[in-house]
Length: 242
Length: 325
Image 1 (cartoon, helix red, strand yellow):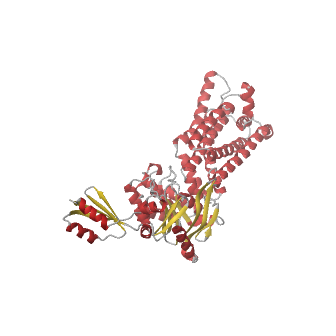
Image 2 (image 1 turned 90 degrees about the vertical axis):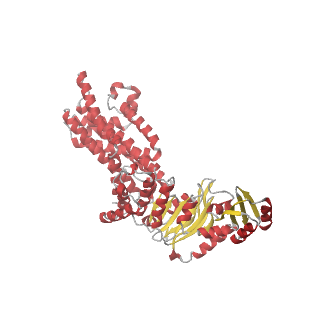
Image 3 (image 1 turned 120 degrees about the vertical axis):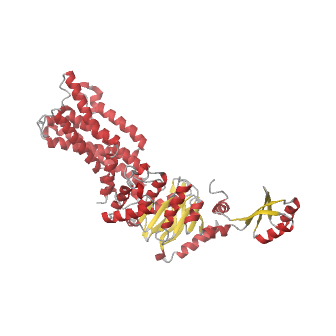
């Protein structure tokens, strides 16, 4: 359990950083309320709580990618990671310590979004456990990507790349717009990545779909989750080997 | 170079009695592409000894430490820490060492207590033990008053001391201090030296520095390293004695005439005129002799000082360049 001390530290590092917590936990519900009000004004039913919740949560996860990457890149640059590598911690301890705290923050974020969603009239016809499963996969997917970025780039580079990923995902992830309505290259790119699949799957389940209905989307999400997490581990190991 | 070869051979010779040594390094080499950062270093450090690796930036000090801490794989050679091979038994080595890296490696959003708890938690210390040792270390490093402030808000000197305290929390048998006072102002440096001195004899310590005064003030023995090679090894005094075979006397006086200076030049190997006096250089200088002669010539002396050789002179003599160049 020696990874626990580092995991606790990583949690505190994020939890005590107002910017990081603002983006990860504060911003998603703000976006939900914003788009929901927009929908009310327009009289359109595309921005309902059911549609917005998966988008907001995934948006928060992408922010988590950036901030977990910043923490790791910062630890590399400040030599804290070097110091930790001279302790008896094993590679698996590091992976756990740089993963579990962010899952905890993701859970916090999901809880906040569900609470706000409930206030905005969230309707759930399907299995909520299935939604949570999709979101759990996406959390691990985003944390894996964060670990890869944090291993490969410096703190400054990661801030830039992370912001670009957040904007990119907002556009191509089908978060705030219907990709099918946009069509063309946008749609192709969007559906070659896991974000739109996760959002679609979660929305479908909210509206009553079962596991077999979302199998394809879930397959995309799971494949990316495994791929990004392995990528994260490989990048981390490569970086810490010498 | 002849001298260094001799010194190193003797050093390895002593190492047959393995129980006395905490660190034994033999032929340790690290190459990065074409660059040889550490070049066949041989060194043995006794248990409880504080040895300083002294050399300019880029001499190979940090690379040596990184190999001893299992952060870098040696290209060639071997090293053991308390009998454990750094390549074959890295986990055993990591259990018994503590390192204070050159960069301040602390968690900025954690306070001093939490930073110490982070390391002690990794080493599996109990809560009570962590509390007790943290209290002791915070007191030793004079951090008690600021222990609850986030580390990023502490002064540079305090952060450096916390950096060292984190290396000590697991009560390591062997401590590596890599440039412990780098970038500190003179006052903070002296205060940090005081804390390091407190550790002398209790731990085996390998300290790297490019500050001559630091090696001089702290270390039992000094290994001078340049270009990845150890070029001299001994106590501060031994090093100075071994290479400094002349003495310099500075005399400040009134009315030293040209004739007097000419006469001095006949008596000693080198005499230089300086402002308000002369500087006399020779293998051996007698204070009385110089003073008696000058007085007999009617010179009134303000002050006479025999300049002590410094480690910089040693370095200059060995490498032909100053340590700070």
